[in-house]
Each structure stands twice: as structure tokens, then as C-alpha cells.
Length: 296
Image 1 (cartoon, rainbow, N blue to C red):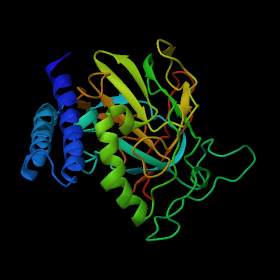
Image 2: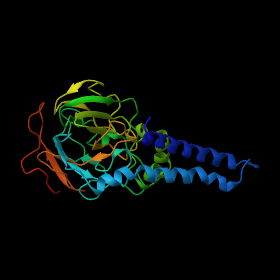
Image 3: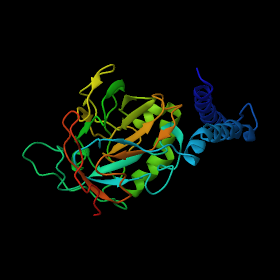
Image 4: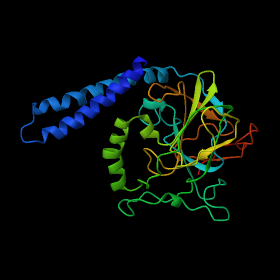
């Protein structure tokens, strides 16, 4: 076990100890002073800062962006994009420094939804009601995810359920204050949910997160070609709605991985709120439309 991996394990142990001590402190006569409850929490925060040092160093002197094919087809919009800020998701943890989220938009030429049925409009974020929505209301749900380059599948999982959306204020508060904390303690797999990791060679790996339950079309150890269908977009893990989370990283283990900059052929890196259309890729044929990214 590497030092970085050991630190991440200790980080989770500290949070578990904190939660256990909080529960014990609620008893009439706890066996320790209340202030001692916060020691493991402080240790966990210190460890988190330590684990981010390698990611911060890499971001300060980034390597050139790696060009790969887009992981989807059709019309999508970018969220939490590294084109606007780095780290794009606010943290370097789990190799997310240059990660991007994308959501499908009405009229997308993706395969979301059943054949012959119109693609549903993407529901807007609501203040109070409805608190949550079912996944079939979102056009991204079920959209095919494609290999961004030739590679080998080193991890593929699809056993976690797709939960309801978290696109209202009450649901988002629950996600941020309770659900995300529990998932973080459980580990990287609970954060990203069902996911695929591809070995693209030269120490580079592509990760697709929040896959649809039971949607895998590949298995670990299988070699894939660019444009090959891998799975479907879902809403598993730490996710507010069905969307694609994509990133490049330098290690297949999310606990030790550091993010790598990317650019999608024919598209680039769309900024937050920027719509783009990706064309179909057939096992290595060019993807993306000339002119690429468009602004909605």
C-alpha cells in the first residue's frame, strides 16, 4: 500500500471515529471529555489538506492537454468545467482536478429515452417542489457512453442503484450535509457510483462516473476501440441528476490519482453553460462536428 493510499484510509478512519464519538457523547456519562470528540475530525481535515498537495502541485505546472474523442453523441451542456476554474469541482481529490460534468439537452441526437419517443426536456432546478424527480424525466438518463480512445477496461461496475434527483433546495441540502459526507467516508466508489476506468496507455486513464445500474456493455480486461459503447449515463453515486462525469487521471486508483488536462477532438473544453454537439464515432473514426462547441 502506498503512502498516499494509507493516508486516505486513515482519513476515513478518523471520520468514522468522529461520528462514533459524537454518538457516545450523547450518553448521560460519556467516558471522555466532549472536546476530545473533535480530535479525529481535526485530524481528518489535516489529512485531507495533505492529500491535496500533489494535485495542487500538478495544477500549478500542468502538463499539456491530451486530445481524446468526446464520450457522448448529441447535444449536451457543460457544468463544473475546467475551462472556468481548476480544480473544476473545488477539490483535487479522486483525480477530479480537470473533471467535467455534462447534461443532455432537449433535441439532443443522443439515444436517451426509448426509440420513437421524443427526448424529454431537462427539468429545471426548483426551490421547494418537486423535491425530487425520477430519472426518466432527464434526457441524459440512458444515453450511451463511448470510449474516448483505444484502451483496456481496468475497472467496470454497475451494481449501485440509480437514486432520485437532488435538484431542489431541500434535496441539495440533504446531499451536501448528509449524503455526501456518508459517501466520502465509505470511499471513492461511493462518491463516483457505478463507473468505468479505461487504461489509455502511457500512464493515462479515463474515468466515467455515475453510470446507470446494470448498463455495462464491457467487462474488466476487455480491449475497446474509440467510439465503442461502454455503458449508459445514470444517476448513481454523489449526483444531483443523471449526467456524465468524465476525467483523465494518472492512476486507476481514485484514492491516489492526479487529474490530467484533456480536450475533446472537434469540441475542445466547453465552458460552464456552453452547449456543444458531438457527432457519432465508429471505432476510431473522427468525432465531433467541425466548429465544435456552440454557445446556447
